Amino acid sequence: MAIELKVADGGRVQVSPEILQAFKAGFAGCMLGPDDAAYEQTRKVWNVMIDRRPGLIVRCTGTADVVRAVRFARQHQLLISVRGGGHNIAGLAVCEGGLMIDLSPMTGVWVDPAARTARALAGCTLADVDRETQVHGLAAVLGFVSATGIAGLTVGGGFGYLTRQHGWTCDTLLSMQVVTADGDVVRAAADENAELFWALRGGSGNFAIVTSFEYRLFPVGPEILGGAIAWRAEDAGEVLDFYRRFTAETPRETTCVAALRIAPPAPWLPREMHGQPIVAIFVCHSGSIADGEKVVAPLRAFGKPVADIISRRPYTQMQSLLDATQPKGRRYYWKSHYLPAVDAQLPAVLIEHAQRISSPHSAILLFQLDGALAELPAEHSPAGNRDAAFVLNIAGAWENATDDAANMRWARDCFDATQAFSTGGTYVNFLTEEEGAERIEAAYLDALRN
Image (cartoon, rainbow, N blue to C red; front, side):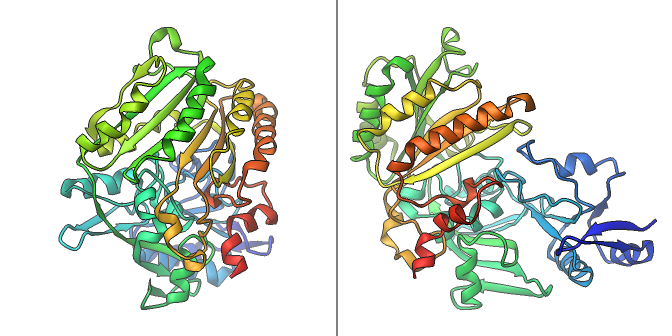
């Protein structure tokens, strides 16, 4: 039976059973259409607000499958999307009616501990890479939620607990294996296909399909000092003012993330705090444990925290500490700014909007960035925005579609109220599908200027 697929210009094309069979004959992975049992689960991504239905999904086992899929799509001028981890807020992994090229089965990781490098296939999550690199006491600069895919994270810039020391995730790339729009396999690195290498370090996914990434690794763990401290919401003003002053003095080995939210029923929080508004600070010190204890001592002594779980723990555990706040299957809507600093007036604005949170899953987050980013020139990569010291993430999350309007309005109102504190730039991986050219340009201000 023929299938109908959407083409790049918006039209439709009929693909005959014979053409499909010929394609399948040389494809090692599996093909899924709307009637196949695994189709629904495969098309669904982390953010259930994304509800698109590809005409065909091809699940790739390796680069050869990706090449075959790209050439098939090129032959028929198909609309395509590429899935890595499926964790992008805008749901870029899924196209309506076209061909989804699914890389998620490709999860191999190879570590060279002597060279301190790792090559990871594009379907890997952060957890896949951390698990293998930590065997050797090494880590790549990755994000904060272990279920995030490395592919989208990296080509969109990427930041995490190690960014203050080593820059954007894409700053630590050594090379990539890439399938071009022509279906050719090339190596992109500083010494080969350099322009493509530049574009893919923060320029996101419209230049080619990366099938593997070679990262520079850094000594981290296997144990670090990390965890979280929480205070009651009525202390938020004092806590955020302390956070502003504390983060201005911490060494680069220490990264702090502040959060304003309603306390979840997490076992590390007292039962009587569950469902109550709190302010929390997540801390990761990736240097020596002894040095870390001295660094965080003033934070642990501040005010009257209701919970403190900062301790010596595996780095892989730290990397998954925020996982429970972002499970697959909720409705997510984010807004964000880069900040040059935490202005003394900002905490009051954040607290005002935190008091308006209606969903128990939403949060306002401040991610610390300052450090190594600023040591590279603005034109080093499209990720740019090297004047950013913090990311403000207004993270709406809720369960029911009937609550969409209220939660999206809350996020937009907070975004508008904090615009004056922004650098003018924004993180491309936090952009939602509704945001247009102006916001996309803001993600690439430095690249556009140079």
